Each structure stands twice: as structure tokens, then as C-alpha cells.
Length: 198
Image (cartoon, rainbow, N blue to C red):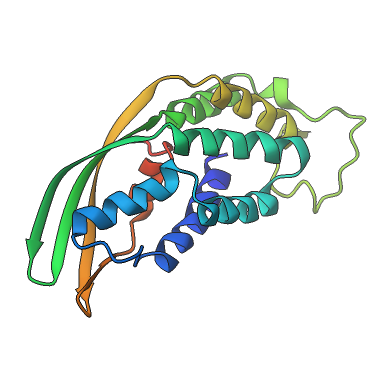
């Protein structure tokens, strides 16, 4: 699941790269605020990128449930900009981001799978070709049913109410008198989505 979540995160990072100008905000702090507000306010570009990414990973009910989780994450995100350091044409803006702690749920799901693997075995009546099952874990001639495990993981994610605060240093560069947000690291993107595990 973390791999699938990361795929969503990486695709959304492409949105970040395409939206780094974010209007004509005067200061680096305002650029970061505008960027985070796009998530918090479920900007149409953010949701469009989310839809596109989820459609390539999920179908039907799983797609809808996962989108609901991510939209809920965005709209319930809190942030506080704590520092702004400008040095010529570069700047660092520090923000504390508070999001749902999805990382703990993902870790708990993986731990549970390790200890209770047989609960997720594919039923012998399930028909699956070798191509379809190439991502399934095979143990003692038993295959893990990804749908069963995904159902379990989504169930845990949907119960998450605890939040976690991360600190992110956003770097910006001034080009033609306009501050532009530099690319975020994978770690920073995972923090925004609540899936970063220390």
C-alpha cells in the first residue's frame, strides 16, 4: 500500500513542479502559503491529478475510498509557517504541517500481514493468471490476495484520527523577480500526505 500511496504522491509532485509559480505572491512565505492552501482547499488541479493517479492504481470502490481518504487528509491539514530566511535569490520557508498519521496505520497493516498471513490467502476457487498475480506474495504455495489485504489496509486508514506534525523546509528561488517553489523531496511529499515513517 505504501508503494501505491507513494505512486500517488510522486504523481502529485509533478503537479507541484507545474504549479511552482502559484500566482504573483510577493514573498517566499506567501508562495508556500499559496501552495499549501491548494491542498487544504482541494484545488481543482490537485483533485484532477489525484483522480488521474488513483485511476491508474485502483478501480471501483477502492478508488472512491482512497480518494475520500486523500481529500480528507488535504482538507484537515493544518499548517503554521514558522520561519522565512531570504538570502539573495534563494529562500527557505519552514512550516509545521499537521496531518492524519496514515503512516502508523500502514505500518500496523504490514505488521499484521506478517503475523497473520494466512488470513489473506487467496481462496482456492479464485481464478488468477500468473501475470495478474505477479505482485502477490507466494508463501508455501499460498498466494496473498491483494484485494483482501487492500480492504484491510483501507479499513485501518479510514479509522485514523490521530494526527502528526512534521517540519518541512521549503526552498524557493527568485527568477525574473518572481519567487518559485523548488521541487520537494520525496520525504517532504510523504509528510504532506501523512505517510512518512521515521
